[in-house]
Image (cartoon, rainbow, N blue to C red; front, side):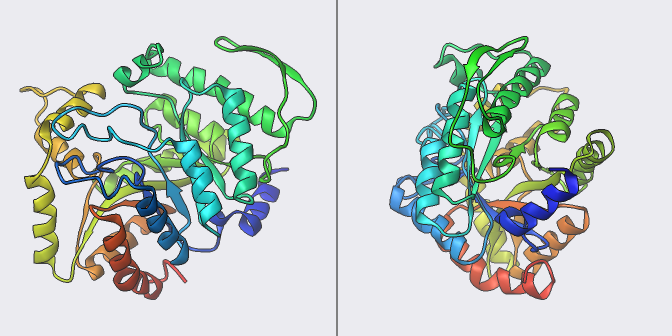
Length: 372
């Protein structure tokens, strides 16, 4: 189908492309600590009943996205941040069976999951969910995690070239009848086939978070949603380049989304105190470990290192949204006005804070015209 036909099809059948102006969701629930690198207890979060209760609540209040982090190894420190996690494909399948409307994603490391297996798993979950599965395609960045699989971390742009081949195989398995061979620089596969096909056509919704030049081109060429991690509102403006390249170079539509930690309370003073409590209990050793894995080092030439550390302790590097319900809505209005199509949230305590969000923030979002 052409671009216009695909746009119409998805608007009618895929929840993530509904008529809500700002799509909403929950992120990182499946890993201990989520996006908050602190020493707070995580036993409650790492129970299946808790995970299911949160996503079912998000489903009931009309959110569109349930997005997990793909993790196999913790970040060290006293908390071993993200060291306990639910595997993403099985998490998505189980969540799909327990929900009605929300889209359930897996976050798949292309270097760690064979494309034939990924295509089959994705098609299966798309049937379980009746067309509500999405795939977040990750190139890989955590070398120690990949070493668990005896897989070396490729050079940056090579990761995207491999990812392009990987995704080409997956897309063909989702759409082509009969068998085919594939021979690329990295993958040489013979007699490929996969049935049944996904319910969604031409396949499940695809997401990527690449913001480097190679990542931007990969997203513009291949996926449906480019996912950013803005440290300040102006960073959202940089994501618009993906949308422009997709439109002008590849004749495609790409939506823009991001993540954010939300700390919302009745008063600004209460919100700031709750945010400070996260920082006061930060696992700074684990945060430094994560920054090292991302290639960020401290030193006299990196004046923004301490501020970046704070953002990782409280929000995985994104700008935290801290304030009253009215202030949170004002921030989301600004994000939407800058061209953002959706946002997925982290919370310190997902269940209680998402309940508060649904009661206090969602009505204001409707008044502001971001939801209906």
